Amino acid sequence: MPDSKFTVPEQELLKQKEYNELVKTVLSSRFSPEKPKAFVHTYGCQGNVADGEKLKGMLWEMGFDFCQSPENADLVLYNTCAIREHAEDRVFGNVGALKPFKKKNPDMLIVLCGCMTQQQCVADKFKSSYPFVDIVFGTHVAHRLPEFIYRRLCLGKRVYETADSDGNIVEGLPVKRDGAFRAWVPVMYGCNNFCSYCIVPYVRGRERSRDFDTVVNEVRDLVAAGYKEINLLGQNVNSYNKDLTGDKQFPALLRAINSLEGEFIIRFMTSHPRDCTRELIEAMADCKKVAKHLHLPVQSGNNRVLKEMNRHYDREKYLSLIDYAYELMPELSITSDIIVGFPGETYEEFCDTLSLIEKVKYTSLFTFIFSPRKGTRAYDMPDPVSRQEKGVWFKQLTDLQEKIAGERTAGMKGRVYRVLVEEKAKPDGFLSGRTQGNVIIEFEGDESLIGGFADVIVTNPKTWVVYGELV
Ligand code: 5AD
Ligand code: SF4
Image (cartoon, rainbow, N blue to C red; front, side, top):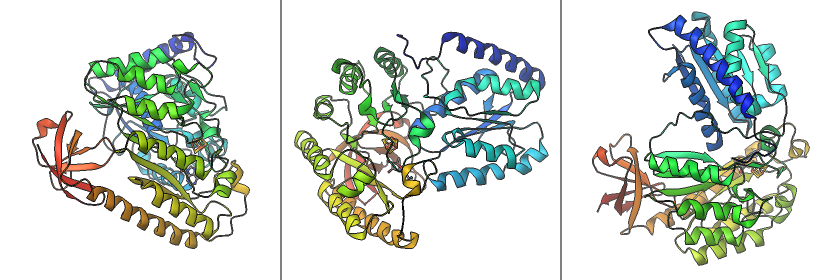
């Protein structure tokens, strides 16, 4: 793999392998013939989930097995998210709840990492107010987990490693995937967009892309190992290899992966409308294995607000992309993220978001009330509209989307969809899968179908779940 300035040198990884062996020896003498148990929980986006699978991979190699609750774990690791205040509050609460477990078992190791702890102020808070937390580290040094555990276990020191950095690319880490047929494959890391409300560029570093062939080979291996859904991930996948030629950029990557042998489906997220090109839409339309689902967060339908958000596109450009996408793929399912109550947004401006939603006819939306994030530009903007008022707007938005989603799913009645069967749904015991467009379908069938594709005819569409029968 060609080195980029972001690539972590092999020597550094070899050093971590040595720490891995040291930790393994200590743990096996302490726990043998049992294995120590780790409880790992990831908060937030799929990028974090992908990181979590690598953290689990490293723990597995150190000799840990995994358990389903923190209570009797020997190690608890929370891989945190900083996107909104609510996400952080949950982590603070859940970490606080570990205190009695640690009291019962003082050897329990408590490890915190991810976007939240990349912020110095948060790491400092854990240092001063949560003395029972053993190891705290940020997003740029996650591959050094073996070293951190060694330092705590063998040298008895609490660990705080949150130095800021432009970020790196670490290849070759072990991965313990949570699923047997759905795989997360990061293609790029970081973000350069600095949307004025968003903490991500501060905690995830600069945009950097993984090597093209390395990604294609990883997907080939995953498909050979039986994975049926490949999710290509990046904060802004359209920026993939932006600095290289077109034959190495994201549309070319989609085409290369699409041409691999085997029956599988390709999904990707997230696309930024600023960089979403006609070439990407054409590649989606051409590639049979690419799900006809585009997650294209608009955030707001009002041009002044979009400008204040530093989004670098306007409503007209966004709608023209949507028109082109529907023209090439009339069956396309589009989803989006929306922020309600950005500082200074007026009700009239919010209504532009409503009218855009009516126009686009999204399949579903991820909707958020603006949450001020310290360090971002929007944190200091005057924000006169009350939380309560924003709540009223929010409800108006979700009601409208519910109506649109209901109309869309009603149109699915009598049609056949090929779905990847994912699980037995609770509580009705039906099987559950998703259409290419990411609509959940439930139907009766044998559990042996889980992990494969099935054709299902929709018989009874509801707004958020449609019911069907195997054909
Ligand atoms: N407040 C509310 N929502 C936010 N998002 C990002 N930052 C904030 C914030 N400060 C939302 C955006 C983004 C999604 C992942 O989270 O809609 O697309
Ligand atoms: Fe945040 Fe904007 Fe980057 Fe998305 S594109 S991660 S919203 S800064």
